[in-house]
Amino acid sequence: MKEQSLPAGIKHIAIAGNIGAGKTTLCEQLAKNFGWDVHYETTANNPYLSDFYMDMQRWAFNLQIFFLNSRYQQVLKILNGDITVVQDRTIYEDAYIFAPNLHDMGLMSGRDFQNYFDLFKTMSSQIQPPDLLIYLRASIPTLVAHIQSRGRDYEGNMSLDYLKRLNQRYEDWIGNYQEGRLLVISVDNLDFKNNPEDLGQVIDMVRAELHGLF
Ligand SMILES: Nc1ncnc2c1ncn2[C@@H]1O[C@H](COP(=O)(O)OP(=O)(O)O)[C@@H](O)[C@H]1O
Ligand SMILES: Nc1ncnc2c1ncn2[C@H]1C[C@H](O)[C@@H](COP(=O)(O)O)O1
Image (cartoon, rainbow, N blue to C red; front, top):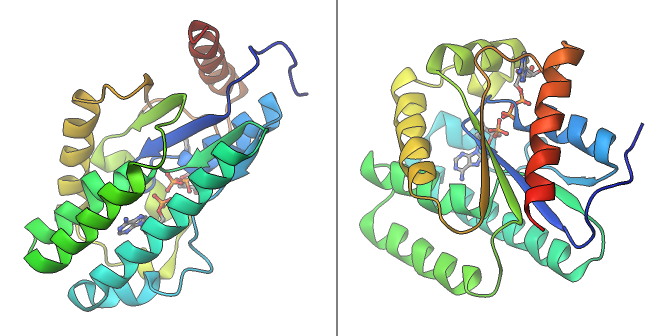
């Protein structure tokens, strides 16, 4: 049942985390509990994702531009709307984690990365960070178990090195995050998908943060 007693004026909650951390699952649960809308990440209808996993160097720039635009459109909708939305991953994760990692791994050229990042700076100057950012912290074994249980074909040969690099970048980014309210949830021993007590614990944490915003 959805609860009614949250402070008014909160529009944008975002869930951040590495691949398989549980963002989509938690978005659904929070939306159900608080009566929010969800803006999901574009995976099934993504024109580049499966090609990207087959040849990262060829498709890195195309995929980054696609995600940048789709995340930007989502934020514009949220800021121009009057309902509360929970967003499945932020534009900051594309620009501060995925894209620079591809550049570092030699999978995106210097000029493509610079071009991409200049575009990100122009776009991000027009928007605001979320009212609350929820970061789902997960160890590599947890991420691997979740990715395997989800069983998306194109993620089947993702390397451990790729996942580890992303996790390190997530930790660095979150360690320096000062753009707004932040809630960090360690998910290694938390099953908010199947265990109602664990879900209740997470909902309590989120509710406390939201009340702290005012
Ligand atoms: N806390 C959790 N405990 C157990 N399974 C989980 C948990 N969070 C997510 N899962 C499962 O792991 C898989 C990936 O979760 P998902 O929400 O799609 O992650 P993300 O959106 O972060 O990539 C799904 O099969 C989901 O059911
Ligand atoms: N910016 C991105 N660059 C590369 N890959 C990305 C980016 N954003 C999302 N992805 C990938 C990772 C997963 O395979 C799918 C869905 O993300 P998930 O964390 O499982 O919700 O898209």
